[in-house]
Length: 410
Length: 165
Ligand SMILES: C[S@@+](CC[C@H](N)C(=O)[O-])C[C@H]1O[C@@H](n2cnc3c(N)ncnc32)[C@H](O)[C@@H]1O
Image (cartoon, rainbow over all chains, first blue to last red; front, side):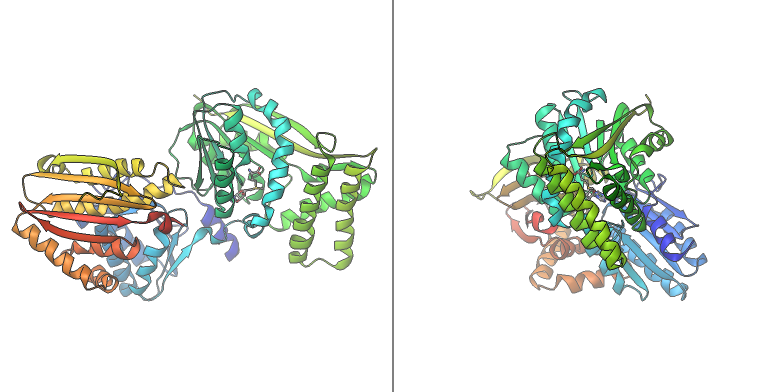
């Protein structure tokens, strides 16, 4: 494995911390993963005195004495540390660096826990070779594109088009009134708001990592008078939501942006209650189609798939949903596909969405990949032909979506 | 402690004996109260995570410094984006001395330096670290006032929405 690959793997590793350290705080756990040289702290670390942390301190000291190079201190799921615990960490780090001159310590924080990065930054002064990395600053390939708010209007039109279909599809996948629902990677939150209005849920918790999108979501929900939706900043790969909490967990058009979707699916599974269902939707972009000029359109969308792959994402994931769900341990898998077309509503909406794709895929991603002018011209033409097909009086343009759901075993 | 502009969110009175029976009460109460205080905030789990960290620190201080008897009174109040934690703690002389020293140190205005020193100091933990940390990391405004009848009032004003974003 190359270094960057290793980093990505490490970043996406789940914190499988074991319960330990009696008296150190509710649900406090630590564990050391030798392979990744990673020491993981999780839960609430509020010891009354340092003695309560002795097992952790010993394990940390032993690990730090043995290893070479960088030790990763993962605090992504560390919800709280009191001053006693924090001082003990600072002491451990300083001793470790003193005793092992070859050791560097990199503390991995997350922006999801608001105090974390700033507080851990202080530990940089404790010893040389201590670094702090906020791991979600750049943790999936398309983040720069997707967390950019210029994407907002287009997401909204997309949801308007998919909702016409999904409104009828969702009940077939088990959505009923009075359910507790989570929408993970909610984007600008319009789907969560539509679900709240239509399906009379007990609660909806909608999580995304883009603060700009969340701010937009809250504004729109307030304007529309939508209640019972809570928009929460979070990381889908490491959710702070409790196990078994929701009846229905959705994640739409998002597994396809991660290089390891199975890790996200595992989290969706975890927060779903036994008997509840996980519902996902994804695309297979190479199957976008249109008439006239079918060939040009098809060529460009096949290239979209390659382009996404180049950035470590899989826009072809749709039909793979069944396998992914089964591998996660979900049962009673239901799967179907639908085609959003220019005939569904206003054809201009379809055209607008394609124009937005063009600007993201051609002007940003292909340019970033360093594609030639010839390629870019041909690539762009497919989108223009798709727009023409959508607006053509006798034309037809389609965007296929795959939805799948599975039940968490009872 | 009353301030007409502030509205009560939650109020709790507890015999010291009950509160101080178990260290984990600090965490339990902090978690519970933080959940209530985060209702209506923009991102409730994020807010509650911050709020519980702050409250837990205060409760741990009280757990360590208070008279053996009497009652702890405490309230969370709200005025716009400011949340106020108001605590009243019965004190014996050693607790009184601790809070007086804490107040002096906060007045010195250099909580950040004091905090860094205390983090690295050997030996017993200086519990004033809790106050310094609240001031530095959470922008808390802390007022410590002795009151009649051997008690201390702690008033902590927080603008956590700003810290959260
Ligand atoms: C393609 S958009 C889909 C948004 C929405 N579900 C929809 O259908 O419009 C992918 C979303 O995933 C979010 N996202 C990416 N990585 C995330 C992570 N680790 N945790 C939470 N959200 C994430 C992005 O911010 C973006 O809003």
